[in-house]
Image 1 (cartoon, rainbow, N blue to C red):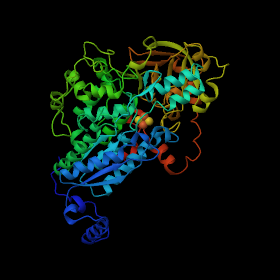
Image 2: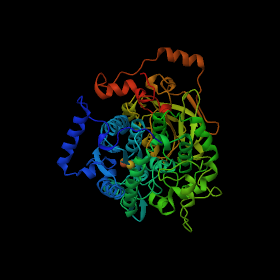
Image 3: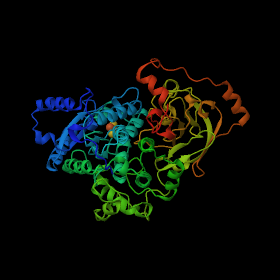
Length: 572
Ligand code: FES
């Protein structure tokens, strides 16, 4: 908690004119153009990140959330000030949203720091946006509360409940296999995302939001309440009021996101069978605070903590079902033996208080007990071995169990273009027992580490009924996807990692139980291949601008793919 006497409200961070009195006078003069009184301008100022964009339907409810948050701020005696930030939607970001996450984090950090706010409500939701806002707020070290936009309601098609985007992938795979025709897939495109809000499966957006609640950075219920429910508006109002209290106390993310609360968030990540992306994002957020997320400690959590939440892609339900079953507080109650329940929460209490207030919903089946889990041994496993010296990840809970232990012949794709050109070629030498390898799709290689790790099953195998194969890459995967898919192999191929050395026909062994991923080629042969390796040519435009900055500064997955110069004490 901050106890110093730095300027607050309108007096914070004055523009530099060489005369502080004049700077403040000028600021007041300009802002009075908006009709503010001196009384209003003397209140604690609470910033609201306006991440609304016509390109971002996941944030379509942001104007309503801002209005509700303004109400809460004013009821608590503060002055709300909304300001725009970059907005990133998954399917409207070329080449990939991850390429832009760090740009949004830079924008958020500097706008929070530059403008005079005593606290900020971080309103975001679509996958990269909340991580970017948290990274920025952590570095700006201004009191902050997380307000997710919330998940969409479910869709319906031919009597089946479905939603974005696990079912997008499942139904598209059926279309590729010739089981769904053009007319039906067109109809389905209007039913997968039926309301505003984030994807309503346990994808990245849902995972990041649920973890923020478990880490005590968002109010109880904020991780799960549907985007279009009145609950979400009430949470916005309460988040605004809470931000005024945080401003008065000086409580920042640094005070709340401690090793204990990060541990609690990671326990929840395992128990919800959450998105692999969330691990990268929380590594980056914690990294901004100087906390190193230990992958092996995370894996150890996974060996103890069962998957308890029955949501797609690991289970059957959707986020609104999780919310109505009691949401994160009810889950925390089941997980209490694994948690540090003394960890503080943004509402002024502790995780123990959240658990005590958890709702008991009779006969709900979404949040299981440890005696009746969806899966034992956690959702995510961390792999090491000669193919991933800095680690790789597999989402055990969404994989075909028989493929978790597998040895096969490598079928290698040198990059996204190569994969697009050859994957569906009828002449491709591939069998269901082979292991598909995609490289040069990591943070530097693609660039931006796209969600290409969900390598489609080659068409000729899909037609023959093959639904899963072992797939390995240095890319990421959508949190909504499923399969025996190894991701984030680090260091990536474009940085000279061992994935660059794999050749067609090599044998690869995946041993998830032993947490190993190995290329079964002798060290002598690998040394020869390493000596002959040349890095891929940089993409067009890599000599200037953001692409140049990105390629020079981005770190590997084990450091959250943050920019090296943004880490505390960086001398890059
Ligand atoms: Fe925005 Fe899925 S596309 S959360």
